[in-house]
Image 1 (cartoon, one colour):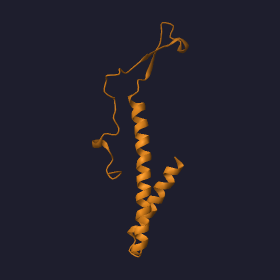
Image 2 (cartoon, one colour):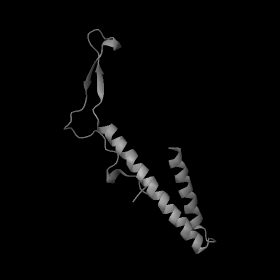
Image 3 (cartoon, one colour):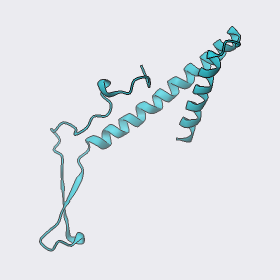
Amino acid sequence: MNNFEQDLKRLEELSSAIKQSDISLEDALKDFEEGIKLAKGLEKTLDKIEAKVQILMNSPELEEEPSDDTSEEQSVKKPRAKKNEQPVLDLFTPNTEIIGTRS
């Protein structure tokens, strides 16, 4: 994840540099190209993370039910979610995306 954070910081630096009025057109274009490459890489990484989170959010969880003994060691585990049920929470639907993060 360190590489992601470094790339994001570099993208922010490039964005700030491009906004400066004293930057040459050539330098702005060079920074823009580097920024586009970084942004695409960051987006790809985020897509992978989102997919993993979706899998985790939609997988059946095990819920412990204590037996008559009520000891934790003898608890019975049963699945909470059925395969046909909709996910409890969908973090990545287009309507819930934070404004300004991605197009």
